Image 1 (cartoon, each protein chain N blue to C red):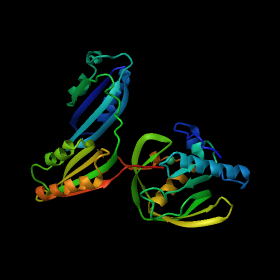
Image 2 (image 1 turned 135 degrees about the horizontal axis):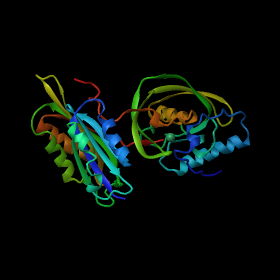
Image 3 (image 1 turned 90 degrees about the vertical axis):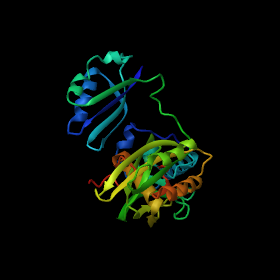
Image 4 (image 1 turned 90 degrees about the horizontal axis):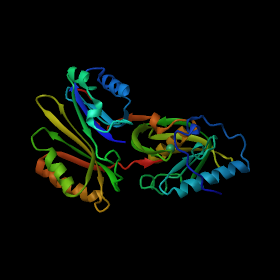
Length: 167
Length: 179
Ligand SMILES: [Zn+2]
């Protein structure tokens, strides 16, 4: 049980594709707890991915239940091991930031609704349908497992809607 | 190390950024923050730059002359110490959309309400869109609400303006989500 240090870009680990978790053993459970502790300790964070604390394994934690945007629509505290998005639909744009990329924010368009499959902390297969902010948070964290940062997904430099249409 | 604000504007065409940054590169300048965009038919560049040895504008010599001969206006200003550092402003980031049939006097009344309340504008852009017969003016403002001013209060102020100016205004929280 430990709060771990969040790695920041340009740490090379953040740009690597993580390995699947091979076996749900004690080390794996400790990693889950460390991720939860680290998320909690950062106060405002709603998710942490294993590579952000220096472990190149496919595991993330997400919890939007305490945030203004996710309070009314969430699955509580999620530990997701070897997660995979099976379906996605809709579009939602949010201004994202990331603890591993301090001081920078950008508008990112992501699916509004996702069906995601994963192993929970006990090793049971789960599939949940997440929408809205929770869906965005899950997609952001899952990107970390593939070495992608939100910087790779910024969709517009301006906050406006009108600029795109040229006269 | 001294920092400089460099502003360049001129008729838009491909290659302006490459032209300008080549000069900076050859001089050995660093580009810190920069923002470049098309305004009307003009391309406008604003850059905060530094150089390990340059301390005054004179240090740049005639480096920008070729750019000016290309029809671009170049303006260089020396920043006072610390002028390159972004201030950390506390508060919620919000976006104010103002739009309506084009008429004089939309921008000032809106930003005056913000200025009067010490609401800091971090980004603002305006654009004339729509058809020539029915031009529509669109202004987007990003601003930081100081802790004492809730979004609802700002929305109230803007609602009054909306009636007075006969434009549409909406206000929303765009505080980035940290993931
Ligand atoms: Zn992140």
